[in-house]
Amino acid sequence: MKRSLSVFFLLLVLAAVPASAADFQLVANNSVPTSSLTKSAVSAIFLKKTVKWEDGTPIVVADQNDKSPVRDAFTTFVHGKSVAAIKSFWQQQIFSGRDVPPVEKSSDAEVIAFVRNNRDAVGYVSEETPVSGVKVIDVQ
Image (cartoon, rainbow, N blue to C red; front, side, top):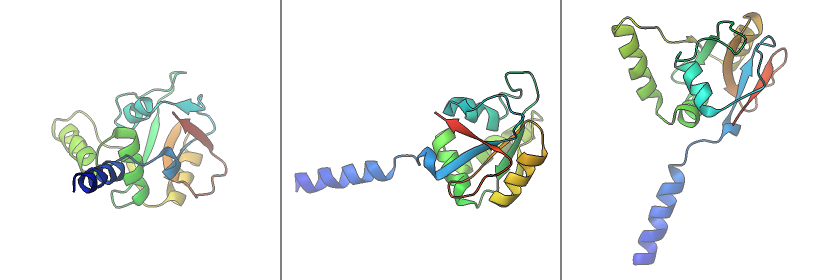
């Protein structure tokens, strides 16, 4: 009985492990002056705590809509929180007059198009999405 309970808890813990970086690709406009970022740096960018690239140009962020499976994977991996928790963060920011959330796009294709057409833009797409005309940023 004790062994079964231990196995059950092990499986429960493994199921709660965050999604891997392979569940999404971080994409940026070719003008973006970096090729890799830490998870914490990406989190700060998407929460608009970091608003400029290292060369001083403003960061333009594209998020996926809250019903997107890739947003769930991204949010869990990068922020270590649920999409609902991040939405709550943005509601507080709006209510207090501090900031508004990043623009939301409804598909991987829309994110790619937005990032390709906006200098200094960054977004994320599903792992299997073909990415042409943008660069993929390594998330460490």
